[in-house]
Image (cartoon, rainbow, N blue to C red):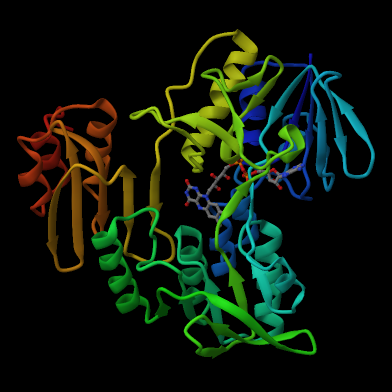
Length: 407
Ligand SMILES: Cc1cc2nc3c(=O)[nH]c(=O)nc-3n(C[C@H](O)[C@H](O)[C@H](O)COP(=O)(O)OP(=O)(O)OC[C@H]3O[C@@H](n4cnc5c(N)ncnc54)[C@H](O)[C@@H]3O)c2cc1C
């Protein structure tokens, strides 16, 4: 059997590794539009912040040799002919498959793609983006930057640049940073604390309306409130769109069943895949690394053994890079809100029918593992939760209060 992957990212690498570790001896071809061994996008901001490039290649730089893979790199897949089971790439070549693993992830969405033609304007999504920003920072001795987009990735970008000693203005359309991973009050708290702890200039309810350049070199940005910021570096991090076009002809993402099958010969996983939520069953793209890994393993197991099914995705978001001020959120922010705050710590748990429907924890996240377990297990916590979130305790006491066995 010949197995082909579209994409060489996190899901595809996990899938291929599982196949080989479980003894699959047949032909594997990986086709990717980038020119690198598989790398972790989660780690690339650390590289930009100054860590070694080697750390991003999470399964080793020798991945293709180690797992006996024919790698076709720098070749975007442009069309999958599902009837003939043939992949077409941008340079006019083809590759047949018996089984296809379609894991092309997502790409950045740009409000004005033409801005990227100006020197000093970058996306923040791929290793190529990080290398280009890194080179530019060194060549231009950049001291001031603007990041447009204050979601999880935009904040990641801003913090990485701060770590490199660059002053950052973070421009965000919403009323608070991290607006998708927080409710209003939690987001306001996180925004305030991030501003205090980093000294970042945060502009809310604002967008970058126009860029200012001289001879193709960025010199500043004009905001929707009419103000201008002088800068030679603009990073765009507004949102992402699934790369489903080559298989489906649109960018809505690929629906999968519980075996991660999109059709009888095509598995999918990761940021391009639509799956059901493990708790509320809502189908959507749940784009994070743990989901991508679990999906890839389910697909590999099903392909090899014809068994196993996916338990569903969780929308867990963890901001913990470059700064000792973590923010974690899980689930939905509706139901009865129970909140506790002291100093730099803010915790809120949402309960529905006595069970955790979602939670946000800011500042001290030691409690998160236990809450996560109860959220997943659907246990009632209404008797203990108030006491639990309102105290500084060590892990042993948390375990005891939540009814887990002693460590
Ligand atoms: C900056 C950044 C930080 C992140 N931090 C975290 C974090 O801290 N925690 C967390 O859980 N998640 C994080 N994520 C998300 C996480 O990286 C993704 O959920 C995960 O990488 C999904 O794996 P994937 O294989 O679906 O996509 P990817 O790893 O993005 O791989 C997709 C691959 O497909 C390739 N491709 C795309 N189109 C084509 C085509 N037409 N033909 C061929 N190849 C193609 C892409 O170039 C890429 O190599 C972060 C993402 C980014 C960008």
